[in-house]
Each structure stands twice: as structure tokens, then as C-alpha cells.
Image 1 (cartoon, rainbow, N blue to C red):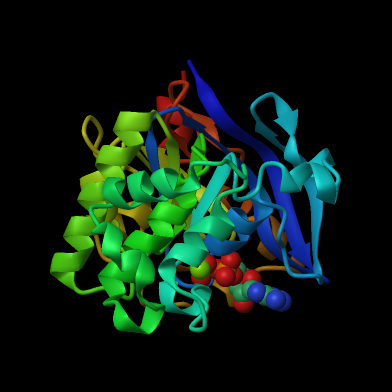
Image 2 (cartoon, helix red, strand yellow):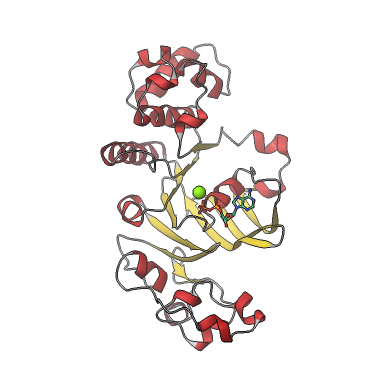
Length: 306
Ligand SMILES: Nc1ncnc2c1ncn2[C@@H]1O[C@H](COP(=O)(O)OP(=O)(O)O)[C@@H](O)[C@H]1O
Ligand SMILES: [Mg+2]
């Protein structure tokens, strides 16, 4: 199996609050891995950990992030700079915020290109062609473009150094439905054509089901399930709530009778879980079902673990 990145036992906290807990996942070359979770579940923190751009008050407590056989977390700032924006491309939610209004699109693409090559003009034209933009767009300024065009420019900037991994953090959240479909189609074909691994972050499970080869479900800083939407029906109760298979528990009195130790150790979804049991009040590992998928649920994980 050709993994482009593997995250092992990653935990991150902000002062005393835990933000990411024991994250384990990998992405293969050419694979789109979707990370889905509600706002505040830790998706962006996970993305920023990979490129070592966490806010100052965040601390990595444990874990490894292996990228092309090297642990990113052990790299110095100068080492990570040879990877960030080069071997790992990034696309964010609001392209307008990342494009400088004072510079043309051509200047942005030149700046993004790390290898200062002589025939950079051809390189830039090819990058624009990849994202289906006309070469003339180089002479325009960001505000003259639509949101979809701006996102295509961001994708061209992310692609220009031929990365092996792209992190796309909610890249279509600010776009309309039709533009979203076009951008998704573009990302899909680029990942396949250049064998790029992609971490695609979204809060929209329906979108993830359409494009993800595998989907990781985040809740409260934990990954609760990883599944393949083409071959598996999700089994974790939280995922089943997201996909509308079951309903979330509405009475929330359960926590009042628990002691502090139980609260810190139990399943993060305990309070809202319609299928919870007494045993869910203990710390759970992530149960790998096969090498690629699994879940963090005592009811389903244990039974289906190999
Ligand atoms: N700079 C920060 N300082 C302290 N806590 C933060 C900061 N940024 C985000 N958080 C907290 O970290 C958690 C995860 O946030 P985030 O990774 O942005 O989630 P998501 O991308 O899934 O919405 C949230 O509880 C959020 O409030
Ligand atoms: Mg986010």
C-alpha cells in the first residue's frame, strides 16, 4: 500500500482543553480522503498540524505525522518550509482572503512557484489550463473574478509545484451548488491524473459520500469512524445520525450521575448516543476492522474487529 501520509496517535491541546485526541489515519497516493465533522470538531486543527501551522497556544502532546518517510513533527521550521506549499499544497475555504487585491493573478502564480525557472510563463499557462482558466486571466486582479474562478486560481497555485498531497479545507463551502460541482469534478480529475493524495475537509456528509474514497468522521476531536462509502454502510451511531439512518438522543440527563473520571474517559459521543451502554464509560481505542477502515465504538468495533 502506497501511503503518502500517515498520522499516528496524534493528540493536540490548547492550554488545558484537548482539541485532537489519538488521531490515526493515512492517505494513499491518488486517494481522496474526506474528513467530515461539525464545526469545532477539530478538522482545521488536524489540517494545520500536518503543515505545522498551529496557533501559538496549541501544543502537540503526542504523535507522529509521517510524510514521505519523515516525521513532520520533528522537522525544523526551515525543513518544513521545503514541504509546505511545495510537496503539500493547500486550498482553503475563502480564496478571496488569500489573494492579495493589489496583485494580478499572474503575480500570484509566479510567487507560488518555488522553483524559479526560466520558462515560468509556460509553467503558469499550463497551471491555468489545468484548472480550465484562460491564459488572459493572468492580467486580472482577484476582485474581478468570481468565487469559483478565485478558487480555481488557488487550486492552480496549490498545484504549480507538483505536490504529492493536497489539503483542501472546506474549499467549496463559500460556493454555490453548481460551482461546487465543477470544483469537485476538477479536484477529482487532478488527484487521479497526477496521483495526488488529498485530504478533503467538509462538514457536508452528502458531498463527502460523493467524492471520498474513504471518509473519516470527526466528533469532539476524535475520529469516530473511517469507512468506504462505496462498499460499506457506516455503523457508528454518530455517523448513522449524520446520514439520517437513526436519530440522536434528545434527553441529556445522563451525565449528571457520572463522576469526573468517567466523563474524561468515556466515549465522546456518550451523551448523545441512542445506542449507548454502561461499558461506553471507559476509554476506547480505535478498532481497525481491516487495514483501512474501522471505528471507535464498543458496540460495533469490538464485534467486527478482526
Ligand atoms: N486559536 C485558538 N485557540 C484556542 N482554541 C481554538 C483556537 N482555534 C480553534 N480553537 C478550538 O479548537 C477546536 C477545534 O477547532 P477547529 O479545528 O477549527 O474545528 P473545525 O475546523 O472542525 O471547525 C474548537 O473547539 C475551537 O473552539
Ligand atoms: Mg475548520
